[in-house]
Amino acid sequence: MALTTFITGGTRGIGHALACRLLARGHNVVVTGTTASGVARAEHALAEACGDPGRVLALSCDVRDRSAVGLAVQTAMARFGGLDVLVNNAGVGVGQPIAVLSHDEWDRIIDTNLTGMFNVCRAVIPHLEARGSGWIINISSLSSKNPFAGGAAYCASKAAVNAFSEALMQELRPSNIRVSYVLPGSVATGFSGRDSDEGSDWRLQPDDVAQVIENLLDHPARSLPSRVEIRPARTR
Ligand SMILES: NC(=O)c1ccc[n+]([C@@H]2O[C@H](COP(=O)([O-])OP(=O)(O)OC[C@H]3O[C@@H](n4cnc5c(N)ncnc54)[C@H](OP(=O)(O)O)[C@@H]3O)[C@@H](O)[C@H]2O)c1
Image (tube, rainbow, N blue to C red; front, side, top):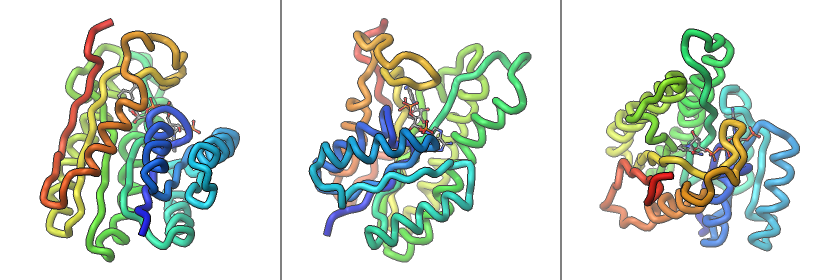
């Protein structure tokens, strides 16, 4: 039976590249985003790319909204009969120096990158535990270990993702649920409002990160690569 993967923030960037790869290897794929037009566009593009609209589900769901998350997970389960892989990819950044960062912007970054991950894990883990297997892959960032001025909220949120993932990995190992987290360096996407072409001569491409995630899924059941770093091969 085809595996089903739920990717938060899969309407563009890294999540979308991963959705393309996993559809090509036969998964059912669920992607989410907050923008209705982006969700519709992604559903159309992914269905076209794989030639089988029945394996694609795109949902409007803000990971900060725990009831919307619960509904999205239920909808995905009803459509595909279960979930096998969760990729917590939705994320925002980067912000401003703390002295001038608004409280709203602080909340947006922490609530999306950290609490959003908790909301989705909380909704999905009972299903994985009931099935007795699964994989959760959290997208962190090299910024989590290389903080920079002007990025305190983002870097702190991603450092928290690392700690969250390490603890979750230990909690779920006895249940045969694997937890990994991936720390990409700079990727050529429209992240944080930048132009996705900017720096595309040296930055990673979204598909490079997607390849790492797909490779994780090829590991035998006895193996758990729990933390993976990927960076551009050369500096800018
Ligand atoms: N790009 C980089 O250089 C880089 C480096 C290291 C780590 N990362 C991490 O990689 C992940 C993906 O980044 P990306 O570069 O692919 O970003 P992106 O191109 O901006 O895509 C972000 C995706 O997340 C969705 N999203 C944003 N807020 C959301 C929310 N509250 N609820 C649900 N979906 C939400 C967006 O859809 P809507 O706009 O419709 O909400 C979009 O599909 C993030 O966690 C980011 O921190 C990125």
